[in-house]
Image 1 (cartoon, rainbow, N blue to C red):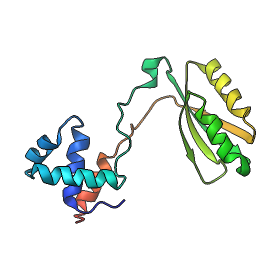
Image 2 (image 1 turned 90 degrees about the vertical axis):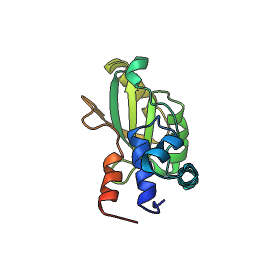
Image 3 (image 1 turned 45 degrees about the horizontal axis):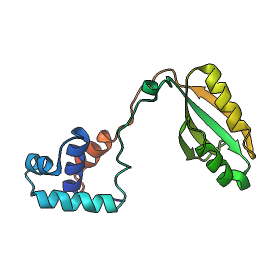
Image 4 (image 1 turned 90 degrees about the horizontal axis):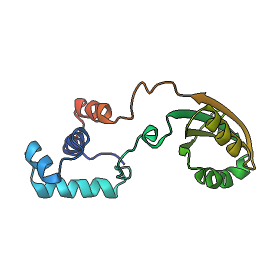
Length: 159
């Protein structure tokens, strides 16, 4: 979805910067009517601009301090079944289909290296999984963010 204008971007910027702010508060801060903000947020939501609204919980707070990224090569005909099997593994918190030598890039959390070995084995046991290359995250350098993208769009003066 392409954003319609700078007003949408300003609303999103305020919402991202102050995630608990209400539509009324956003309207007041941006000097827009409450109705304008609500209509635009509704249009953005219908257009798929928002990811699911859920509180982000740190896996470490649940006892999973280890994060790894696994590049998975699969037999293409088995891709759909592998996705279903991977979805049944709770420690797989995210997966993306990719181009290049890996078919999937999977983010996994674990208790420790031994737990990661167990998860790796469960993934390899799925029919059609050919190879997994694992990289353990030592430290998150840049957290997930979208504010710089909004600022960039606003800086270009796109309307």
